[in-house]
Length: 321
Image 1: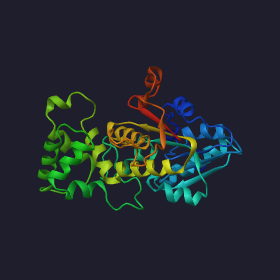
Image 2: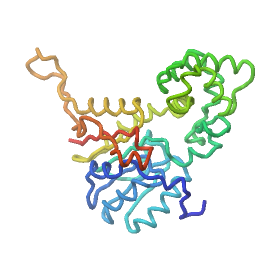
Image 3: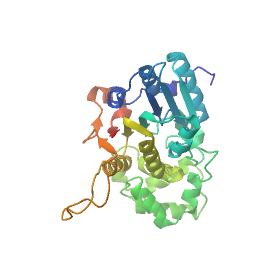
Image 4: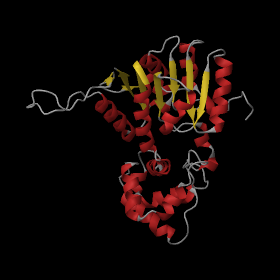
């Protein structure tokens, strides 16, 4: 890819852009951090809002995304300061320390795995392409890959991962089939894994509900990349770095992520937790965040029709007190 030229994959429409901008309430001079930079679809609009007196921080662990996003920001919002930080938002404390910023006025987490690098067949994320089983978002720093999970985890752990992370109804049957097949030969490709998943799901169930491998691929990807632990660490760090009045906006795409975000915001917005029979507070708990979205925002029907990625998107927002 030539510097300054975005591939078609990088031109995907940012999900719920209007809702994100309205929720963050950025203004000229704000410091905003896009924790999931990707192709900078949200970032170029946020950068335009903070202007030449503000600062955009963008986090991504993929060099290709950082290069494409940097070129796009230079071209579409010239003059707006930006720092692009290579890393995982689970390491937000270290990344923000390296950026030498005292605080941040807005954080965006877009948790959808739509980054173009995930569509490269050789990365092993797609159940539509036959490729080596990898699924690492950051191969340089992560030695655990999908093939190791599938070929070495015991049947009980495989079933748990598929059931909890993928919400797969037939988790036990698929785990049993994985163990049976790997006794015959190693499971090394996405094509093999898809066939195993199909064999573990009854034929009637395979005829509806989308691709039968979708949930299992999601589950293995989450395990390989420790995605839920990373999200919790990222939310904790963002809360610490948020300036008073600043906001965190999170777009999630499945119930596991949404539940973590909801629970974090709820926990951080709680005050005293003493039993009602105690007349004077002894716990000392004070709320840190105010929840802005009691119910998550969802995409409008016209956006869902235009951009299918928005169908399962939910936005939750909280503000630093």
